[in-house]
Amino acid sequence: MKALLFIIILLTCLYAGKSHARNVDAMKAAYVYYYSQLLEWPDLKVGKTIEICFRTKEQSISDQFFNLNSQAKNNIHVIEITPGLGTEACDILYADSLSDHEDRPGLLLVGESQSTADIKFIIQKNKLSFEINNKKIQMKGLRASAKLLQLAARVHQ
Image (cartoon, rainbow, N blue to C red; front, side, top):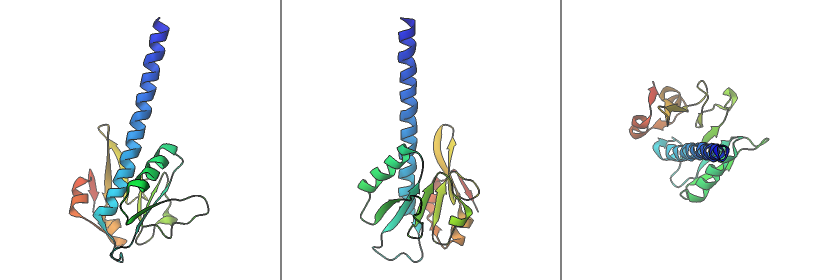
């Protein structure tokens, strides 16, 4: 009886952990979407589609970005970056790992890599938040709205 109870508790904890991870991934995808609404690109024409690209090994976050694509406004398009596919068409790139060679004007890099990301996801007090490197964003010719800067846990000037 104790073994059965232990297994039930263990499975419940494992499911809750996966559910929490899924929620965090859903929040990451939602944040990336909202970044597209709270940033200004200097050369973005009215009515132009914003290309949100993602590259991840995590199936749960891929699912969240595909879900985002089905719910996004008409001016948002989500693209999965697979090996051999470049990021030239991307306005925003979320990736598990980012490299300096992907950094270019007009491209917002989002991830968990402190040195390369323009917006870095962080976990603070068990909640997902983000830091913004506003100086780097401005050097790329992008402008973060006051609302986005207020939402950030930390803004690097």
